[in-house]
Length: 332
Image (cartoon, rainbow, N blue to C red; front, side, top):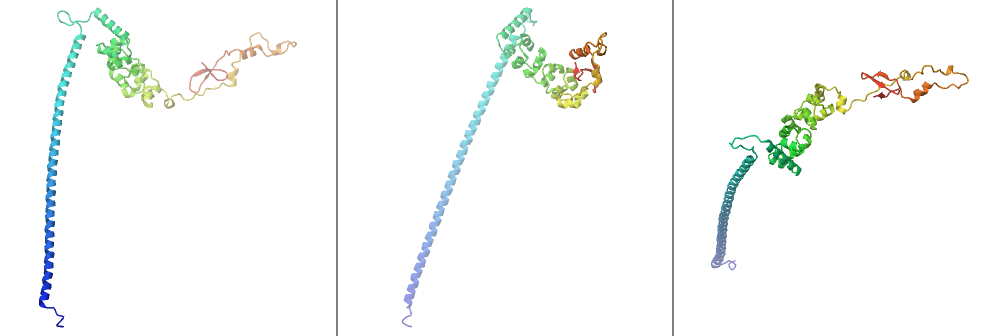
């Protein structure tokens, strides 16, 4: 037992060794902690620097874009100002041209300066000039640009369609006297009603669809000569048709034709009335001599070959009377 016990010096030395080991470990741990803190601080500083650099860069780019946008807006404003000046110049030029054209097209003035009507020679020259324009196959656009009216164009031989292509309005066409070909020219039924065309003139202009929408009444359509089928195409109802005075029934209105008519047939008694009586003085079969053979009367043979001379008038179921043939067919 005494030999196995450790001496105090040995124990103290062992303890000192363990203390040195622990101290060394603590120092290494502190060094690592200091190094980690230093690395973290370095990363934080670097991140902050990068953020500040990015912010500065973004602010610079934003300022550059804003400056470019301001320059673009300023350029657009300058261009708009220039365009306004050019538009004003164009308007002034057009007004000058219009004034010049009006000055050239206005009536000649006398020596005193007062306006006077055109003379006969000037009217003839104007008419001949328009005739030459028509003969040169120039369209109505040039005629209108030259200052001729729609009435002068109509007198020169231009059609309503050509007047429409030339730019004349529906009111000018009415003043000129155009009626036929209004629909084919492109004028609407509403325009014709608005400028004062009557329903009869609208019928001459070949208008059917759109009469009611244009403002014409069914009574005006009836007075103008439209039939019930055309009134239905124009948009009028059956009640409006009846109120206007048409006597058509609903079958004719819905189907576009009258209901089938049942013609009466002649009876046998009525057919017998068509037989022609024998001529006076001609004997029948019973009065002829026995030596001659009996044959049918001559009037019966003539009745079979010749057209009937007697017409029977029979009252029909729809009222009135008509002439009918022996087989019941209507004779016109």
